[in-house]
Length: 355
Image 1 (spheres, rainbow, N blue to C red):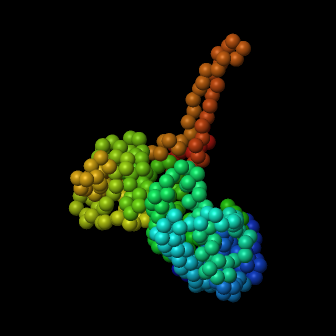
Image 2: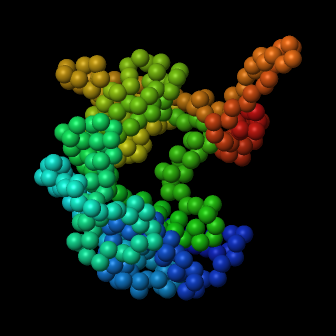
């Protein structure tokens, strides 16, 4: 939206340490960055698509200043259409049977297409993606997987990719485009959407308010990948790894919202909540998948991500017959609780303080 992009543009124009003049040069750089983010392997868009986009090359700077996002969404919508076409093509090829693939043909595949010409027509795209399918099949055959298993695995893989593509939101496109603009200033300048910013702050502070469960996509379901030790879910004993979540309800009486087929981050958003609040989950227990679902209630709390914190230990080492103690510091990630720091908390956490 216009109201969102204009403040970002003004901040970078006037407050970034790198001064950039708005003009055709900057516009061209934004255009190239965005095209690279959309289709880095030049395997979705046609030469004709890119030729039509080229009219935007020297117009993006003016559009950004005005807060106009039409060119960005136009380019993405064409890419999205091509992406869906390619995934549907792969699924159709797999559906005809992998035994129909001819591996006796003498052919080569360009695995790195970053500098390759854009495909001229759909026939060339078909050739590229048929070769990619054959390469995927060969890779799995080298792992001694039988053809029926390969067919099932690849069908599941490309169906999941198609589902994820169709779940793309306007917010995702906005973040991608603004980052194409921000990268013109330097590679470490990035825009975070509200949700991405929230996740960044959680990772940096090593704490969140929720139930303490790591989730993953499991075909149409969201399932439990692992439980954070000593978190609310772990302490409750009601949730186990590989349990599948069917629906989520807020409090003791809120309606259960069916989340089958949802994006993973949307399900996470529903389950997170303030300390002391309650969330209800309708689950399919891993150990009782044939016995239907059950509803459990967990009280949210502050969850400490201790496994990502800096750790220290000492090891006895014998040197020239003398046992000495060697100190070892392990830093899994860098972190700093900026919110606590800004609020003046003398015990705020950071990598350097914990070390």
